[in-house]
Image (tube, rainbow, N blue to C red; front, side, top):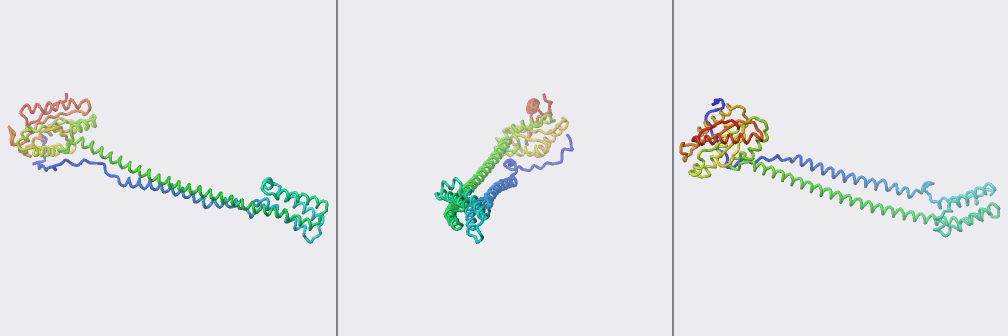
Length: 395
């Protein structure tokens, strides 16, 4: 026996009546909160960007459109009728001036009349206004008469009143049409922006709804995952003692491929008689005490399992039979000091164990033969009268 592994009398602490709680993944409220803030910030930023575009269009594009349609303060923005009327009024001023009406004045008046004629002689004016054609005829005739000097300046100025009045009517009507076009355009643009605004709000609301649904589905998925992990962990544990079960044993060995391990099988001698004499609640308490004892003796590196009934298994790192002998010897010694009473034991007054152990190299192919070898060693101990241990080599 390796004395360095024995620390004196063992005090067995009664384990709780129920197995330890299955550990679950730690909650992540901070990550969820950060994801919440991120999604909400992106949604709000998208909505604000959309509103900025709408406001820009309303506050900057509208005035530009309005200025384009109402450029009355410069030459390029004036109507043709307005400019034509200005030339006729200028011609009137020359005709009615106090200066002598000489050839130079006559030439200037004819130039203004020609310019006015060219500006009013457009298809849209002739089609829409009945006074256009007579006004053109008046200007054409007046130009000829001025050339032939068959009309006085005063009479010529009087004849221009008709075309000027026609052009004034055209100008006023065109301004009304322009105002109607501007109003119609502004109204259609306003309706468009209302549709755009409401559609954006609906899209934003749908985005929030989808985000809420996403978060809800995410929480459901996280909850389902936690439940699945909990059930998987629960399925790998013995509900009475809280240690692993047979499935956990095979899984843990499979994860340690190539490692040098020891397998220890432990069976409580005459456990049926213990239950029959003291009752099953006391039998369950004995199983929990034995699990605590195995954990104490074999240390933190050992993995414990209850294979069913009164049979336990332990897997721990071990590459030397001498170390395994020390574990088995110490296990029987500590159990003897614990002095678990067994009134129905035919050969002893306290609980005894039958132990079979083997060292092996972990692997899917080697574990079955190692388990079989340890099980045979256990039953050889039981056949020899129980209350002992035996170490064998893996087949």
